[in-house]
Image 1 (tube, rainbow, N blue to C red):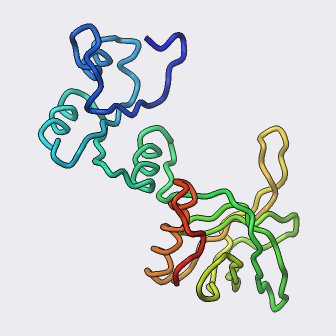
Image 2 (tube, rainbow, N blue to C red):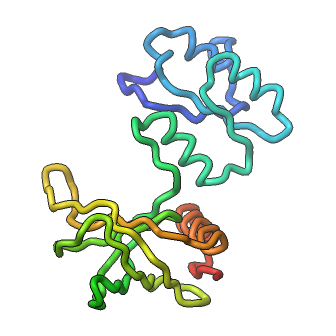
Length: 198
């Protein structure tokens, strides 16, 4: 059935055709080699009873259309990652102006989420330090906030790890967080006007 490739997870549409006269989820659960695969069933809001039935047959989660990218991402991560992420991330390069120990610097961020950013740099920073951030993203107003350095990484080519600092946003307002989430979702789905409404 999988031709030697065993996926970590399958998104299974409720409207999949029968496989050897049995629904796909039952077929997966009957095969001891495939039974370890996590399954997320996808259906319409009107399929509530059928989705509940799938959960009782061994599906790990159920999603309803239209699927929210953040919900999908968080659900998948919670099922297959030992340390699941709580929010959607986007790899994008943009300028960030920071004030660190009364010195203003311009850096480049390579990852953003609604919780924080990763700034690529080889400079040394102190973990736990609070810094001022100005994100140069396309927006209707300047994005100025505080962030806390939670970790620093060094370059490691073998592990494909870039040098830099991970920053978590402090006291981010709920509207800005929502706008960042919509901005990231829009980029990932290709449905964005590419400007943050703040």
